[in-house]
Every structure is written in C-alpha cells, then in structure tokens.
Amino acid sequence: MNARVISLIALCLLPLTLSAATLTDAPNLTAHPVGYLALAIFILAYLFVMAEEFVHLRKSKPVLLAAGIIWALIAYVYAAQGQPQLAQNAVRHNLLEYAELMLFLLVAMTYINALEERRVFDALRSWLIRKGFSFRALFWMTGVLAFFISPIADNLTTALLMCAVVLAVGGDNSRFVMLSCINIVVAANAGGAFSPFGDITTLMVWQRGIIDFFGFFKLFIPAVVNFLIPALLMHRAIPNLKPVASTEIVPMQRGARRMIALFLLTIVTAVSFHNFLHLPPVLGMLTGLSYLQLFGFYLRRTHQRGHSAAITLTGETTPFDVFHQVARAEWDTLLFFYGVILCVGGLGQLGYLTLVSNVIYSEWGATLANITVGLLSAIIDNIPVMFAVLTMNPNMDETQWLLVTLTAGVGGSLLSIGSAAGVALMGQARGAYTFFGHLKWLPAIALGYAASIAVHLWLNG
Image 1 (cartoon, rainbow, N blue to C red):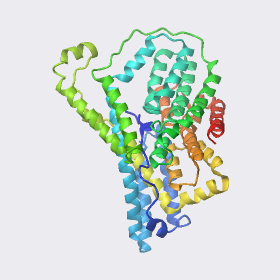
Image 2: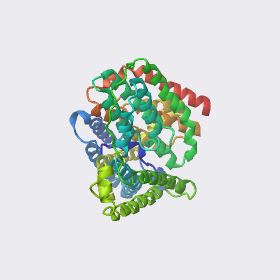
Image 3: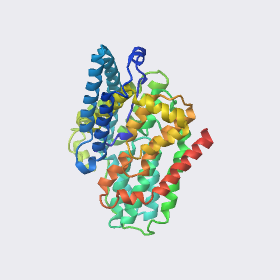
Image 4: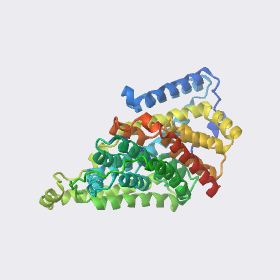
C-alpha cells in the first residue's frame, strides 16, 4: 500500500517541550559550524525526498541517514563541552514521540489494509461506475465523497479510490480526468482539515491538547469554501457527456461491514480515552486493534463452516489473517516519520526553530506566519512544517491554532506535489494528471485558499 494512511496519523502525543534542565543547559549552536552542517544535511536529504518520483529513492532513506548524522554531530559537540547527557535525553524524548506515533499508525494502517482486503473500496468503486452518471455528475460526486470520506479514512486512500472511479469511466477524455483529479486532491485535503482524524496536522494539534476534539469542527465551513470555490470554477470546463456504464458487480467479502463498524468503534475508543480518561489516544487505538484481532479469530474459526458460501458469494478462498495486514503496513512511511521527527527535533535542539519562531511569529505576527506555513506546505510536506510549529510552540489563541491547522492541511492543494494525495494521483493517472495541468488551475485553488482563511477569521476570529 503506497503510503495510504498519511491522513490517519497521530503525532506529538506528549508535550514537545524538553525537560527544564535540557532547555536551560542546551547551548545555542545556530552559528556553530556543526549547526550549519546539520542544516545543510537536512536540506539535502529533503531535496531527495521531494525528488522521489524522479530518482526512485524511497523517501525514508535520506531522512534516516540525515537523522543519524545530525544527532551524531550534536552529541559530539555536547560531549566536547562536558554535557554528554543533553543529547541522550533529547534523543530519548524524540524516540518516545516516535514510538507512540508508530503504534498509532500501525493500527490505522492495519484497519485500512483489512478493509481493502475485504474489498470494501472495490465495492464502492464498482457501485459508482455502474450507475452511469454523466461526467459533470461524477465530477461532483467524487469530489463530495472525497471531502466526506477523508475525515474518517485519510486523504490518500480516499483520493486513490476516487481517482480509480474517474479513470474507469473517463477513458480517453483527458480533460475530465485532469479536472476531476484536481478536484479530488482539493476535496480530500479540505475534508481532512476539519476532523481530528482527517489529517496529520489536525491529529498533531488535537493530541497535543491545544484544541479539543469538537473544536476542530469550527473549520467545517472554511473547509467547504476551500473545496467549493475551485470546484465551481472548474465545473463549466467539464465535458457535458455521459460515459457508458459498466455492469461489473464487486461484492464485499464476509465480515466487511462488521470491520467498518469496528474501525468506527476504534476511533470512538481513541477519542474517549483521550477526552474522558485523559489517556494518550494511542492506547485507545491499540485497544481497537484487539477488536480486529478477536474478530479475525472468529473469521478464521468459522471459515471452513462458511467456506462454500463465501466462495460463491464473494470469491473468498483464504481465511482472514490480521497479522498479514500488519505486515502490509507502509514501513517506508513509518521510517520516514521517524527520520522527520529526529531531523526536526535535532534542528530544534540546535536552536534553529527558536530562531525561526522569533522571526515569523514575533516580527511578522501570527496570522501572516500561519498563512506562510500553508504556502510552505505546498512545497514541503506538512509533517515537518507542523512538527516545527509545535516544537516552536508560539503563544497563540485557539483561532490562530485553528488557522495554522487549516492552512497546513489545505495549503498542499496549491501544487500537485504539495500533498501525498497529489503525488499519488500523478502516478496513478500518469500522463492525464500532471504537475503543469494542476498548475494551470492554481489561481482558482489559491482563491479558495484565501477565501477559506477569510471565512475562518470572520467566523472564528
């Protein structure tokens, strides 16, 4: 699975501030040769990440190497200054952050893989294709579905599913495929912005305890505006044609509906553990994994009993194995997040994030700084950008924290390379959905971006 659960991630499950001793004793190395070298190493590594599609080097490899070198340099300087414990304590803090992230991700990935194995997504796609909607109707249906599915699943899985529908019915109509893919990317990113489970950025802020669970739904109307304005501008460019409907029926496999219910129950468990018991959400997610394991045990024990019926109705020939779904997790993504957390944590330890925070948040002001964060996320992945903001921990009210959550989530729609959904669709619809094709509609997307910010400040400011 190609990094399909980027928008179901948990990050920053514990406070990001280091211990008082570390904050007090850590020297500022921003003007030290080691600081310059570490910064250069991170920039070089991230250039490789951004060029993954062209150099075919998996994104985890450069950041893993960069993380190790950066912290080795930090530890060397601290040891030379007689403070070897500083680097050790800081690394352990970042490792604790990553451990909780990895476990949260693993549960989310396992559920998505299980639903895929039960053919839930294939069944939804075949239903849409069978209905014989016009191109314009499909344009809106795939966009609206992407907007409302991504807050529960994730923007990448949602975008890939909707793109499969577009490719199946679009055929050689490149204009329809191009505009629909742009619409799907914008809708999926906007939909993930108003739900704590919809995107990395919302999970970061929620699990940090800055905004409560229901506080994120204040972003619903701004997110709708972000999606609707580009869609309305693209609508008339969609060919007013009706493709030939398919007759293919794809049934879901046994237990699919119950797995959907267990996934929703897992989300409720994670939210309840955090909101009512004040426990880390990852504990609720791992409890939810036990639901799937127990149900998987039931499916295995009853597989032989319902074997003939399963083959006849759904084509199921092998029993469900939950650990097979765990093994299919996107380990490149998990290791990429490790590298990002350690790299950004290292730059924070050197003092660069404090320096940046003093410039953009103190001198520019929170609103301009948070809008800039969104623009940066169109070029740089929003994970390191938001992690850096949380590490800076600027003094902002709820309106500004919601603003940076919104901009970091939807800013990636400005360019096709600005989000995991856009990058994935360029690969899935190769030749039909391109960087420059997306770029032609940048003014419309930017108008939606600006309007969503204005609506948020008007409603919630």
